[in-house]
Length: 106
Image 1 (tube, one colour):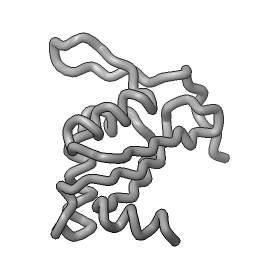
Image 2 (cartoon, helix red, strand yellow):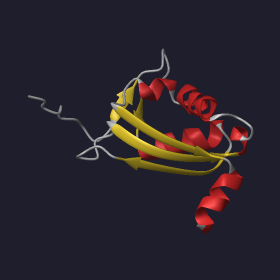
Image 3 (cartoon, helix red, strand yellow):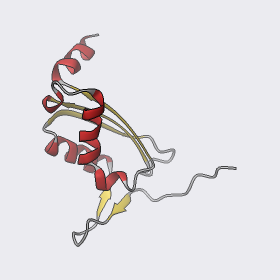
Image 4 (cartoon, one colour):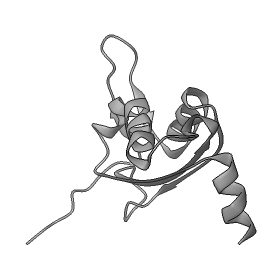
């Protein structure tokens, strides 16, 4: 029988000798915005108790122009490499600004 682990309100990661930082929705949003020059980022903590173990993200960036879906996802995964070590589940949707505008108008 599967029993989900209990967790705290945020997960902490260690980055070598750098100070530890919490993996939060805000942290993920800020990092994706900065490193991928994203014009829009939605981050939802989908963990049962909002305990930072599972996230769903939407990233809109012009850096995705002309890139296939797999390459876009690899870009996001590379950006969040340290954070993904601590996250149990991660779902992502990656769009260009043009795709985002089309989706919003539907």
